[in-house]
Image (cartoon, rainbow, N blue to C red; front, side):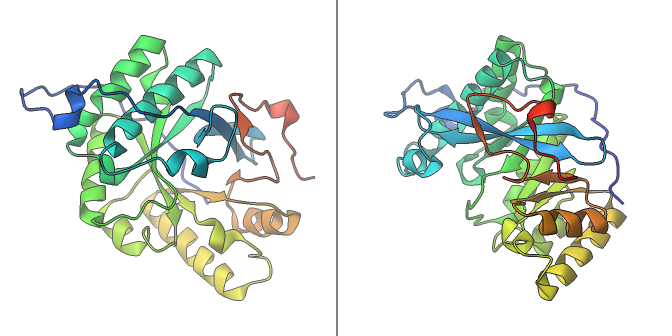
Length: 265
């Protein structure tokens, strides 16, 4: 039921017209430090890890909230750029050999064709292949302008990156956004996944989204899976990419290995 993902040509062109956004050339440092945990996204059919999502943490593994509470309008852009550098650097150091899913903050992007420069330069500097990078929207980020987000995504696709809409079915990522932009992947919001085996309304919605994505050639990741019953319902529905505590918790400054994942029988 899920369409295969084919990486586009990775011909990356940096446009330089002499007018970068104001913060692109800023060397001002953030006043706080952070690190990352990586959570596997599992392909249950192939029984392998499809990707690792980079999840921000404090430098000693503290919660994402302990970091995000430091974000202001004044430092949002610098934080977004620093996140990309840190996640790519860690992924390279850990010798990650599959996709790295990077969350980005749409409201921090001024000019995507210029702002993407940091990502490309970091990947080249740390020796991480550009074709292994996927961009997804930050969980819970309020999208004030859906058409702007669609434009940012289109620019990322133009550079050859895979794209994913996170929290699909929540307040900020729904059918209107999908009508403006068709990503490679959508991640169904965990609010729809929770107890889906018992909730008829969630079942109907997820079935409908699955049919839409099938027709549009978009793959689905079901996130936040915690129980065997949730897993079995989604498996029966034909969803093969899954993420959640049932398989693995986020691993602080480490990546999961296939042989250590908890696969349901």
